[in-house]
Image 1: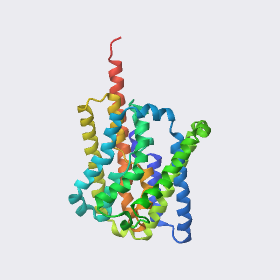
Image 2: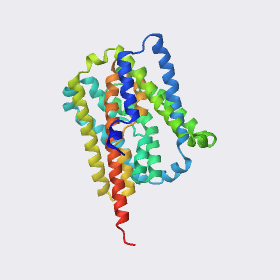
Image 3: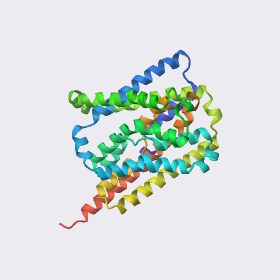
Image 4: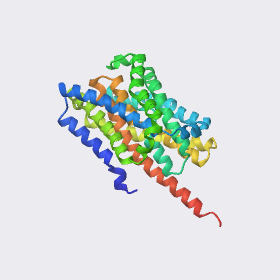
Length: 333
């Protein structure tokens, strides 16, 4: 994989373009209402596809490794959130309240599904366990993300400008994410074969849904004065904070996994499933949990971290692969 591709993949360029268009031509009025309904449909389609991709066999095979899943759960929903919270006294003055809220939101999100599995596969890790862990993380995040957000920010989600209290928010997120996911998985026997032969189309719909949601969210924030409240200095600090968070987590996850005696394949799965945060889950959840005035700053840390994690983990996956190839070729006979 070339360095150019790592830095400028098509989806990243599309995300940058969408943010630029939302800044110059934000949708508002009746157009905003139309995009709001389109976004709801896009989210449902996105998680319907996620559910339809998930193999029942992979769930059964991966679910047996309880020790591995426990470690991933602790890093995703305990250590990562505590790390963001502990850095609060440093981050608040550097970033401002809105961007710091975004960092906390980033830290309490579930892990990714597609890229965690893809990088585990490239690095020759435990793929069934990665499928199960990543999918379970997304489902658990429906409840744990709003709960942890309220706990760490010490306020109800409705106070953040969202449309619902904590229980209402969990219910709304469940309807938007979990229900389409379950329906898609139940329909896998009917459409799984069709999807496997049209992988590029499914990926385009998958990524297009995220881009639509990002455009709608950023348009609302631009209309509410996003770029007047977020300056270049805060953005520069935010990039460094995202790099620091990822470096700390990757280093500690790798070190602790080896200390606990996991196999190389399980180490790879834990590293990639514990260190990544989901843009696909984070954008629609933010629409429920936050108001239009803060949703843009809240999403900025996630979008930056998303690209940084893809670049770093792509290099890391290639490193694991080279190690495996070298160890295989050096074996006698």
